[in-house]
Amino acid sequence: MKRLRRCGSTPAPTIFLVYAAPTPSCDEELEEFYMDLEKLYRENHTFFKVIVGVFNATILPRRAAEELHIGTHGMEWSEEGERLSECIMSTHTIHGNSQFQKHSHFRWAWESPGKQFHNGIDHIIVNRKFCLTDFAVVPKFYTESDHRLLRARFRFSRFSVREERAAKFRKRSPKTVVN
Image 1 (tube, one colour):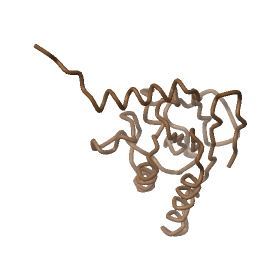
Image 2 (cartoon, one colour):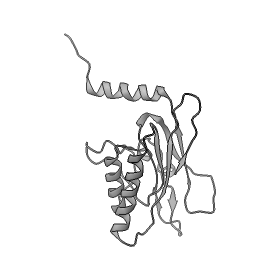
Image 3 (tube, helix red, strand yellow):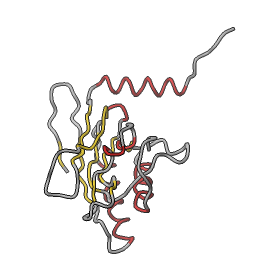
C-alpha cells in the first residue's frame, strides 16, 4: 500500500496497489484475497481512496439497475468478474474502467501470448465517483510485458465533493413542475 503526502488543503488520497494471482490454487485463496482487500479498505479512513491493480477479472457493462457501481461501458464478464463486482458493491466503490466511453482498442490492457485474445483485467476502483475524470489504456507505451499501461485522471479537491453531493441531491429530489 502506498500513501501520498498532503499538498496544501487538498485531502491526500490513499492508493492501494493489488495483484490477484491469474489462476488461484483454490476458491478459498481468491476469497481470502478479496476479504483482505475489503478489510484493508474498511480500516483506512482516508477521504479519497483508489484501488489499482491486476485483478485477472473482466467486467461487462451493468446488467441490472442495482449495479450502479459499474458503468455502462465494459468488455465482458468472467467468473472472477462476478467476485470483483461483489467486492465493489460491498465496499460501495465505483468501477472506473466502465465509467467512460472509449473505443474497444482503448479498453483492453492484457494481450495473450499469441496476440489472439485481448482482455481488460487491470482495473481502477475509486470511492468517489467525481474524483475520477478520465480513464483509458495507453496503446503505444511499449513495455516488456503483456500488459498495457492504464491512465487515469483524478481531481482530488473539495469541488469534486460538492459535485458529488449536488448529484445525489438532484437524484433524490426531482424538479417540481407547476402548471
